[in-house]
Amino acid sequence: MLQIAFAKAVLPKSGVLVVPVPEGGELAGLAAALDKALDGLLGRAMEAASFTGKKGQSANLLAPGAGLKRVLLVGTGKVDAFTPKLAEELGGTVQAALTKEAEALVLADKLTPQLAAHVALGARLRSYRFDKYRTTEKEDEKPKLASFKILSAAAAKAEAAYVPLAAVAEGVELTRNLVTEPANELYPEEFANRTEALKKLGLKVEIFDKKDLEKLGFGSLLCVGWGSARDSRMVVMQWFGASGAAQPDGKKTKKLKDPVAFIGKGVTFDTGGISIKPAAGMEDMKWDMAGAGAVTGLMAALAGRKAKVDAVGLIGLVENMPSGTAIRPGDVVKSYSGQTIEVLNTDAEGRLVLADVLYYAQERFAPKYMVNLATLTGAIIVGLGHEYAGLFSNNDELADKLIAAGQATGEGLWRMPLAPLGESYDKNLNSDIADVKNIGGGRAGGSITAAQFLQRFVNGKPWAHLDIAGMAWAGKDTAVTPKGATAFGVRLLDQFVKDNFEK
Image 1 (cartoon, one colour):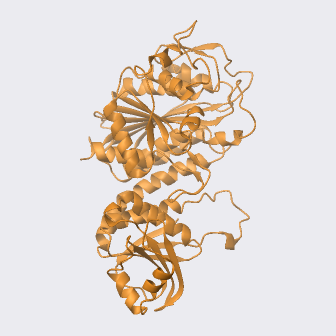
Image 2 (cartoon, rainbow, N blue to C red; image 1 turned 90 degrees about the horizontal axis):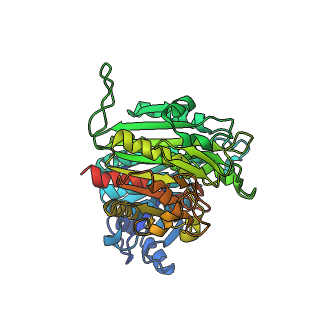
């Protein structure tokens, strides 16, 4: 793991130094002092490279003098537009550029402590690697950057500002680890068992096994796992950040007060069941549990930074496999809500899992808001690509708050239609023999009819569905996310909580 440190802002006498430069190319503070010590070398190099400090620009000086091994000039754009999000991108860009160095020193004497902390967060997020199963990688192929030190005019304040951000980073890393694991290592029981470790953060964790779920009447969730040798699970994670710690008092246990509920789809592997998927690309279906992974990481982040909110995370964990015991197209099951569901396509399984967990969440916890995350449909990728997650909500206020949090963190949401705005979409779900069928009338509008199905199980409770199918896995590196599992939703929902529940 990349070690983050903060130190007093003084010019180092050796090492690799990163110099952020605002648009306009004006060197100030320690950057100006360094330029003077180098007899104007920085200014001349900037002029020769046409470097003006625009966002995305960089200039690299090797062995510049004054004992330094390297100086990396990085453009930060306009001073008044340098947000925490851009500070994170700066940190991530620097980390990626210096992976072969042992240590990076960043001049941050002109940044506020908060912005300096976000630079550090960006570097940590970008440094993530999943090395658990690497056994033959050569030493010279591994990244060497082990230390990332911020030189701040208010180092103590910057370090204090970083503490809660580090907790969020740990939540992101937890989610990325879960999503990256292969399905033979991470199956419903194992996923559930790993959540037990969150108790040390102060979370109350309950695990419901197959017998528990049968007793509750979770017919919709359980039917997805009928064909698997791995039994299904549900996990409930409670954080008592506003009402006090979750400590049993004799036979009484403190209850959450007006919590916000987060629900995640956790299909640890999805073959499609009897409605089996094509072989090409099926290996990607190990991350069909990214919604549950994000909820788990979010709850770890909230507890880790001791967020002043009452929150509950619920995840439904199943494996969707074809076998002689698998659910068949045309079968009818009874959900926890009492509604019967005609299952016409066993590859539309995530909504079956969420139907029971959503209804249970609102019945047991009466949350102020419910937000679910799911890699629910390929159709959302057709509509939005890999730039936005689809947002479906029955509540304008909730939708606006989520969109704002997405803009602040760079985890973008795009709002999609939902009944009553699109009443005809809902009618497509009417079954001839049951209360509802699990797919609409064809491929058209697939992400919308999936959301309509979920809406039938929320009873008008303020709710949002985030279809993250296009955002859970990155095919290439971005500023703060290396190729692979993104943990999309963890930072977004942490920001949503921070903005709306902790003022």
